[in-house]
Figure 1: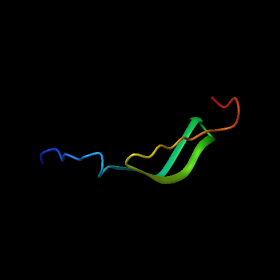
Figure 2: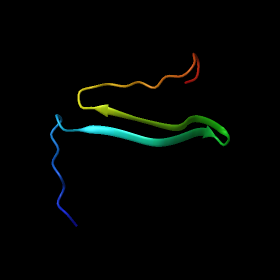
Figure 3: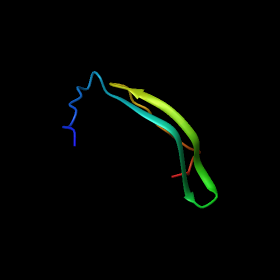
Length: 52
């Protein structure tokens, strides 16, 4: 097993690729969503009013 890779916050990026999610079967909330969040940035995923 390789030793852990140390990453500084300046280098970090979070990547979501082709993400699917549903609370109940057949009721998709996320449908193939892809995006990147560079270090130091913030992202919010929001739905309609009252969606939880």
